[in-house]
Length: 222
Ligand code: DX5
Ligand code: ZN
Image (cartoon, rainbow, N blue to C red; front, side, top):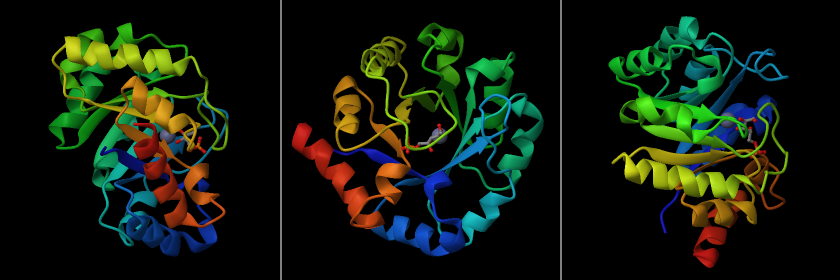
């Protein structure tokens, strides 16, 4: 059962960021997830492009950048220049989503589209061929450590079917509220990539233990 696990560094201890990034890599995460928040689209502020080269100093893992911001188009070139490998925008903030995804792909980056819990899959229909990643939010974005909305399992199932029906090989990723209990549910619904913040960083046994526990939970449930 192979899953793709991305650790959200929003939950890291920033006084020991380098050390924690190395622990994530040694613990076996696949991607590092960088949550960019603007204080408008989501009620929290986090980082800008400056953080990517800082993270890259400590790891060769791909950087999975999740842009939770209004008007992302203006900053996309800066995130690409800063070293993003996967750049995911929210459909709710992209009136010209087709162009935005084209711009990301033309740069050599992988392109993702994220859907808030209330946003229907239908909004991806005309751009599905431009997607490398479809990101389903498990809760209202903005903060780590929230639970997930159980209704999202049905949405993930529909998303998996939607991608198959459209002949898409986009990765189906879930972000928000992933724990040893909820991640297997999302897996069984059809997701194959998962973002985790608090379940990894707040694990009582440490970062590597948090990663192993999430992977083991999927094995047990599958
Ligand atoms: C905020 C972010 C998530 C968050 C996940 O909504 O998009 O990536 O950091 O954190 P957990 O895994 O704690 O829900
Ligand atoms: Zn995220």
